[in-house]
Length: 368
Image (cartoon, rainbow, N blue to C red):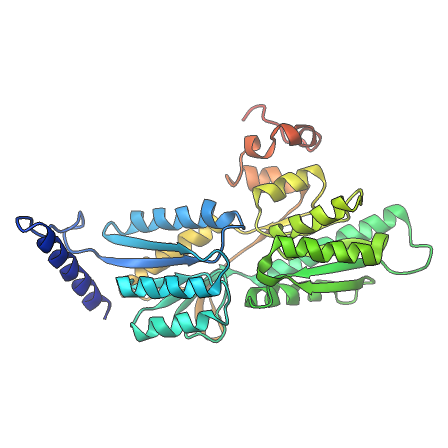
């Protein structure tokens, strides 16, 4: 089916060329034949920095490197499920042979998978699992493990803070807020399961919890503002499902005059998160090697396009999957994991505003 689609697209391109330039013949591409195929990459939004700075360029580069005759169709949905549906349909009409889909809304994305099936196009779910869709492969990280790493770090930070200041006069246990991810994202549920496992049996009170629509930092800010007004200094820590949400929570607490900000978790290893960790505003992040994730997805897509059966590392709800390992990153890990790992440079992290914090943390531009 895929080979037939390639031939049809090549023929269509030839006819178009001949109609425009009667004296011009159809010339094979550098690989010696018609275009090998097209891979559609659909990303959900751009507020999370990694998508445009890491995922997209890495994916495109690897496809170009592995498949000289392949095209990449790219679209970013700007957090709009209806837009993503239209983008996917457009790619299918253009002749995409494989879709790599990071869904805005995994429930709504089922219709994208269904439409791809109608065109005979395999779908690789990227980053977010599409539970009710008949997907072919899944590439992501172990989300429950990420949640567990976040939860364990938060418990440790809260316990350390309680030991330092002593128990509350009213005898209440330490309290935390839970800022979970989007309710339409199965990864958020897996993260929540990991956090809940880490909190199980701990003498910590969950003051309130919130499913953050669309992973929106702005909505996280608004919700934390309301909880600060409600609980005040009873907030001893904040579980934030990713770095964007963490930034929103921290902004709300700083605006309310809370100093120091209680421990806040995160995820994604974003540059802004690294700076907040260095300055003490954010306690930790979980670094996911998104470059490796994008590389893995691109290589998988090329193999699927060629009709191969790629090797996988796990099976999630019957779907062959590749799950990559995450790493917890605190202030002592920024240099080793994020700088030495080539994620961010010292120059990027240690701007003049953060220079003193970098020096205090032992992160220096000297010798680099």
